[in-house]
Length: 64
Image 1 (tube, rainbow, N blue to C red):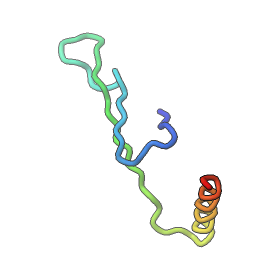
Image 2 (cartoon, rainbow, N blue to C red):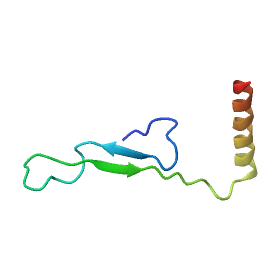
Image 3 (spheres, rainbow, N blue to C red):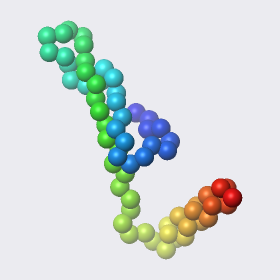
């Protein structure tokens, strides 16, 4: 599955007809729900931190 760019943490996505079979209905399936839970890294190396800061400054320049 592909998660759309810009999907926010905590958002729930619905996958129609990919869930459990519907009771007593042949070839019928419910929906599957996925909750997006983004986990951020805890310990960054100095190089990783510098890269994130560079990305943040690039975003600020683009918004100006």
